[in-house]
Image (cartoon, rainbow, N blue to C red; front, side):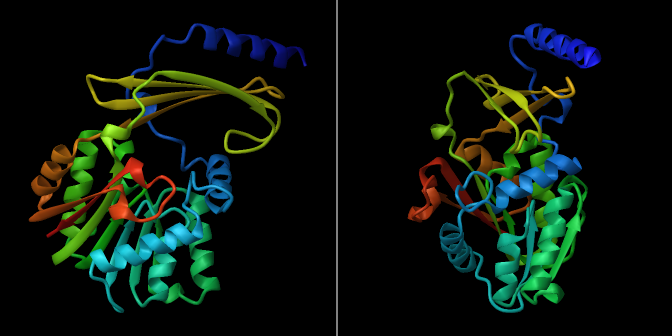
Length: 290
């Protein structure tokens, strides 16, 4: 007990002495998706159909998949690459329509669930789920017909990493193949600094009693949103600190990046092209053709 109290005191002083503003991309600038405990807790959020914060709710997801099917000009037998596929909710649905899908994610819990979902629904042969950091993927000349990079995940990488990822995907597509990228509309990004805190004993940030403190900063000169999370676990005195960065892009910047990566044309659809999604107005969707 004494040791825990000492650790709690040290943790509180660490929070008190934290830098006024975090540095972008420190400690990788991303959530610990591949940490087993966090991975399991995030999976629960993905599968919680009461909200759309991690994965969109089924009715909205179906609307998106119908739209993706049309814009990617998919048909039975088409090969699709799902980058940061999460628990396979899009991939398995596309497999049910006859596609052959490769899904990549480095969350062990999500990949395990995706494989189970594909098996449960009878589409194991149509789905190949790979536990891998997408920055390490190499599917050049794989001749995919289409690729997905959804829910703003391209933005959690540095500009240099995003450029490399787009290049890798372009190399993985056959001539005429298409990529769909969904990123936040820079005009809609909240550019106000903010702070919040709450207590809980379950959820994304931990198991057992904890205090969670969050801060959000907009770095205007870099067009980056940076969130800093401190989670203090009261039973152990452990303090977790996570920095999450979201790089934003103008429409022209993203279009230029896609063209430089090897795509021949880019179509832009603000607000998900009018789909009735609860947060549609926050997003820009890019369809790049090779």
